[in-house]
Image (cartoon, rainbow, N blue to C red; front, top):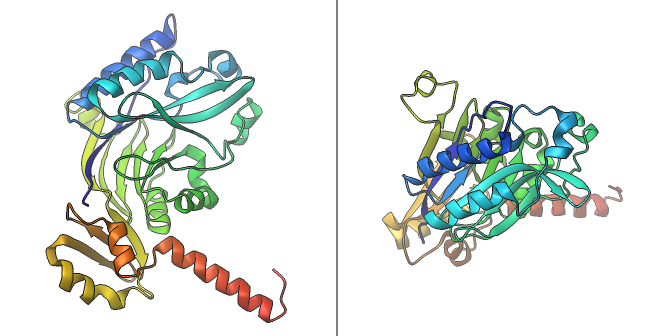
Amino acid sequence: MARFIRVTTVAYQGVEQGADFHARTRDKMADYLEQAALAKPDLVVLPETFNMGGIPWEQWPENAEAIPGPLTDRAAEIAARHKMVVCVPLLERDGDKLYNTACFLDREGQVLGKYHKVQPTIGEMEAGIVPGTDAPAWDTDFGKLGAAICFDLKFVEVGQRLAANEARVVCFVSAFIGGDRILHWCRDFGFYVVSSCSARSYIADMAGRFLASSGWEDNQVRAGLLPPILSTVINTDRMLFHLDYNQNKFQEILKKYGPGVEIENHYPEAHFTLASLRDDVTVEDLVAEFELETWTQYLARARRERDKYLRQAGIET
């Protein structure tokens, strides 16, 4: 069934260092979340480690927070009151370990899951940040939700893990903009990306297009004419496919479902997206009914076949 949801990203700009820094950070976060809630979003995303804004790395360990803790508790209250999922990125202390974390709070304000940055920068690791080991995706009422953090975007294996874990929407929380690399991930791995960066945030679709952008680079934001909050509607009942072994099903799908589905062909990239626009049929139903092979499944099968033929040729991999 069509899952039209509103996603919102906040180009949070930090408060000045000084007395009550963390309390003022929580207040500013809460103000942004309340502004974002005016559009009644399903998902709101904040930037990477915004609870550390300007704190030198050598002081990070003493400023890290537990989950649950003051920052996530404040966000959880707002998430529950407005029935929205919130991605809260923060420097987390878990026992004696430090993580660069994206914490997801569900519509009831409960912790849905935590993503630990798989590929911290060398400087972060020298400062004590422990790398994560996987890029999971959590079930929500609008599909599976995952995250990547800043430097992760440079590493294809992080996107591959998100795709393998069937993420439909990925929150890219970052201190750097990311730019066209976000589009590469959308096309290569078949998910939407909602990025949050103070300078410029994006919402991009799985066809590799920016749907919208905003941030403190914009004159209108700096002038106070627009808030640093970006919101748009996406249909998460959509999947990416290769044309191979699927395109011969197009006529059959359209004959049965007509305006109830959307097939968007992408040439010359040789892939397409299929979406359900009906309340009684999901894109997963379409995949099963017409025996379609998703982008990720097809690439995995091609790799398995390659290994098989190499073995048959007596070549070790």
